[in-house]
Image (cartoon, rainbow, N blue to C red; front, side, top):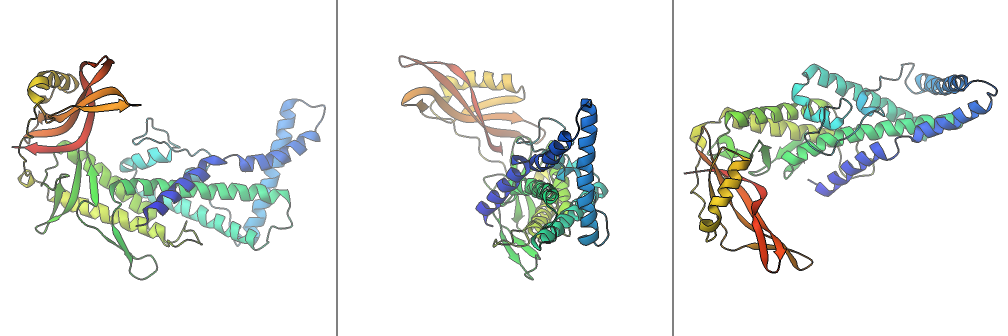
Length: 398
């Protein structure tokens, strides 16, 4: 997989979506200004009505030409919301609020969308995208060359819509890339019939406090921790996993039937939408198999982390801090033998010790990576111990 190119395309799509959202409005604004100049001695609302009428007339004229000469007499397909100027993107996942015009929220909320509604949105976006492509091809062929300023406004709108289409599918790419990125691909027939070839540690599935890795061992698909030990997804974990499966199935449905839409005609990567579909299906099938085999018997417990020389001195304080953050913590093990001094411009800022917090759940005792620090106060002195960071490593212990 060509990671750099994928990231570049994703960023470009997002930039297209947000960098020049008002270009077409500016073009139509020129028409509005001309209309205003012809209306004198009237109230402001009369000017607004006249300019709005001029704008609508310009649009209607252009799309009548499109209907007749580009779409074989058919109306322009309905504009779906992700291709409208209302569409936005969040930069956190999950998003901070339920915005119906956020493509990020839509991807997050896919588990709650019906397959029928997902397929309908896909079909609307595909129809609008293909109609826009016909308009752009007609422009390149010179069909609109004699129509003056009206055409530039329409074409700007079309290009912005295509950019929003790209941004929407870039959001889907971004989600799948987080969960499944380091794989090999093979186009079986050279027309987008992708085979996705993966190995252990390629497919991940995050839950609340850890991440599972999915692969086959001894002929059986299952969940594993980051160290390769067999894992068991608790009922709480299963809720996260089922939501992610539904999300990836939604992505598969949104890309079903797509092939080369959005491909760069001058680029080397072809049938990217078909590949996105294959990646989503492959991930979903593997995780579903692991979930079907999920059992406490799969759990391989590791030895308790070994205490370091700083454990005895700081264990009690670290345990109190951990319990204050999470009452389910029953123990703490500090594994550091020495302080890790963090400096800023050569001056100590704080010093850090590392270890694990131990929680007990319905399966057993689970160790999770944790760190604590003391802030530098000057004169070679440090303050009291405080919580510092939470790691992603988590495993059950004997």
